[in-house]
Image (cartoon, rainbow, N blue to C red):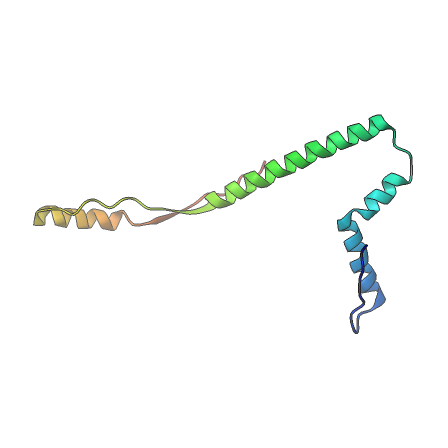
Length: 112
């Protein structure tokens, strides 16, 4: 059962809006509309099958969006070379180490 308490100094229209929003999220309007007319068993099976497909597609879309969000900003670091033994090799590896800094890759999210 949905309850909405009217807050102090809140007008009735705002409380009614909150009540309607909660009813909408709970699916009460959808249930009342569905119960207003008779639904044949075959229509019910088809509707439920469509809802299952829609829920599966929504879940796949959310997974793809989450995967794309994880790829958007990830840090790619290159492994540093091993320490050199001679001074000539050490100078060369320091220059390489400067160029192999950590970079940030930004990939725009794909919309399907």
